[in-house]
Image (cartoon, rainbow, N blue to C red):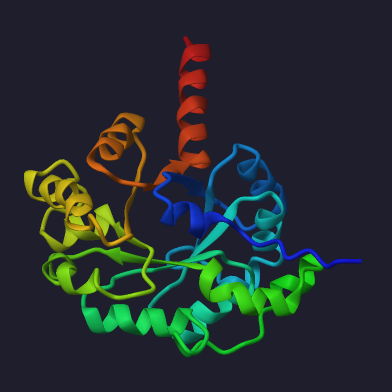
Amino acid sequence: MSVPNFASDFRARLRAGEVMLGTVLPAPTPSVAGAVLGTGPDFLWIDTEHQPFGTEALGTIPALARLRQVAPLIRVAGNDSSLIKKAYDVGAVAVMVPQINTVEEARAAVRHAKYPPEGERGVSPVWPMYVGADWSHAIASANEETALVLQLESRRAFENLDQIKKISGVDVLMVGPMDLSTSLGRSGDFKSDEIQTLMRELPQRLEGTGIAAGTTLVDVEDMEQHLEWGYRFINVGSVVGYGAGVLRQHLARLRK
């Protein structure tokens, strides 16, 4: 009997120029994950940078996402080989590394994310055992299957963009609007001309590199605008944020 590999086509689709739309996992529980996965995102953003949990709290959720044909994306807390390795080993198809400002930091992230000879990642993934996947295939195909997302969150990052985008092994360069606005002295002011100019120019500066421009937004009209600008990787808010908004409206309506 053949052993399934549960490989993801996420990176291949991204490289083919498809638009990838995802959303946030609000809490690391199977019931919440199941509900969010049921909405049909291309990727599930699992944040271990700002949320009070790490990969040890995720259990089989990334494997569950793979089974539902949704790419689990784990944002790690920093550009740390132990964090990046654990994220992939627990089942991440993509890992997001925050606050990449220099070409040296981008190179380090690739080294942490890839098995030799492309990088220096240690070998022993656990997620194949959760789903009965072919362990050897998971290792042999990892460099080709898994994706790496680097966040640009400062003026310095954009100043170094022309060097960063030349690094092989980077699949998405993603703008972090909150950190970017804060670094420019405009915390939360995403609509400022300076921020909008940087964001509008990013897809143009990435043309011909094979790297997708990405960001995270809440308003669907803003997302449509960014798609027109050439963005191909967008996090579509959070089910908690959207759900709370609807609940607030219902409560206000009923109290009238």
